[in-house]
Amino acid sequence: MDHHDHTSVITGGRRPHRTAVRAVTAGAVVLAVAAGGAYAAGLGPFERDTGPDPAAAEQARAFLADWAAGRLPSAAGRTTSPGTAQRVLDSFTAGLDISKPKLTAESAAEAEDGTVTVPFTARMPVEGLGTWTYESKLPLREQSDGSWKVDWTLSVVHPRLSDTEKFRLEREETEPPEVTDREGTALSGAEFPSLGPVMAQLGGGGGGTGPRGAIHLVDRATGKVERTEARFGARTVRDDGPVRTTLDAGWQAAAEKALAAHADGKNAALVALRIDDGEILAVANSPSSGFNRALSGTYAPGSTWKIVTTSALLLKDAVAPDDVVDCPKYLTVGKRFQNVELSEHPGATFRKDFTESCNTAFISLRDRLDDGELGEVAREYFGVGQEWHVGAPSYDGSVPVPKDETEKAASMIGQGRVQTNPLIMASVTATAVSGTFHQPSLTEQDTEGNEDTTRTTPLPRGVVAQLREMLRATVTDGTARVLSDLPGEIGAKTGTAEVSDDQDNNGWLVAHRGNVAVACVVEEGVTGGASAGPVVRALLAAAPADSE
Image (cartoon, rainbow, N blue to C red; front, top):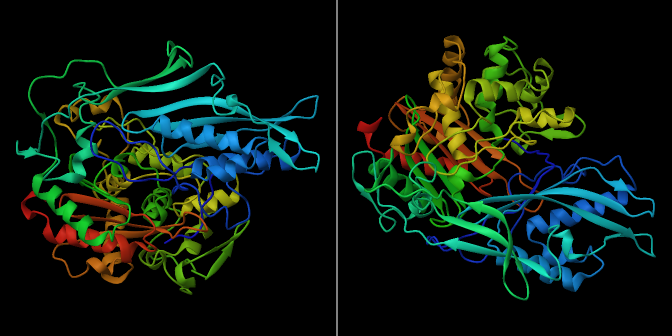
């Protein structure tokens, strides 16, 4: 249940797409989940610059923020040629089917003539294909009124974009493979619409069934290809026969119905997987077409991340469940952090802090972990940030070393630059309650040989027992009471992750019952219990009991 977040990466938002392999044109984007509470703190989306004129660097970063968030008129207004800049930015992202751009600024440098240059890295997700990454630079020039503006040239967008050369996206149309569930039951996009974007990506790592395409640099006059900037998709021949997945038709149907009934039309996603082997039983997205949020989304996990933070603290005996760790309304670490609805629990035990998701209590324990320890625990025990081979494109998480005390405080509660998605958090939950990380898999051919890609250490049995007890208490006596009337020994953790000043918080809930772990996020869901809670409750109420 968190309320603050910092980031140095500006991320575009999400939007609905068609289920067909041929992509629709990328439209306006909105500020994504990774960008957040730094705005509220007055720090802006980037760390403060220590190079040349801070006003120049700030204008560059504001330009990148506007571009990433789809505020193209605002971005263009920060240049010396607003009309041309807006037209080029729009045609570039739309024409290449780019959505959710991530633009990361580097340190500014000043030239002898007084101009300032800010290099940046662009990560441009091309719909349905993959991410095009490149580097460019923003030139800034001081204006007569003392303000700074981006000195507009086409090379601002990409170093090779010019009056004579432009980029062209070419897709190689491929038919989505036939797909079956774990029992051989056929899975169709008509019956399971949420699987549309998933099925189009299946087998890209093995059978070559995924979509393929390329971005070419072409001559504006002749259309001749000068060079290939990026190529996506395997070029192997698809094996005969359907792609057999680990999905369970019953769980998939329950997941799709739960999202359709309780996501209230918001962007949302969930993953359910088996705890003992990591096999994925259901992947569902709302809207049920386009971007695969469940596997490829990048979200601050909010208080669901306290599972990992708690593991790190328990591993080094830095705290015990019965220790008193006070939970005040506020705690200032470079800025003021607070609890949801300004709740407080004087004299609370750490167990109470966990079940009530007390931000201030967790942040107060930050000095008991080394700066990089949270990321090390996430990687070593939970596999987060290692290379996963799921059977479809996936984002495998990031827990960078905090840049300062404020960011360290934020990372304790799943904010800062910590990024995950429902796939990762379902896996985190499974690892926490079993003690052993199992590489999540979506296709049968990926269940073997995963030892070659991930190396993890089992959690001690004592730590697992404490985690299970606290997750269970969160259902019986804490913020996940929405699940308390369901049968079975359910454990869960809620989360609320701040996005930005002008967007409602994202709601999270992770849970486990029997041999299944589930994670759900609802964008702008306000709180986890109220938004993701009903989705997970409906899923567990309807899911096939025999598969647990």
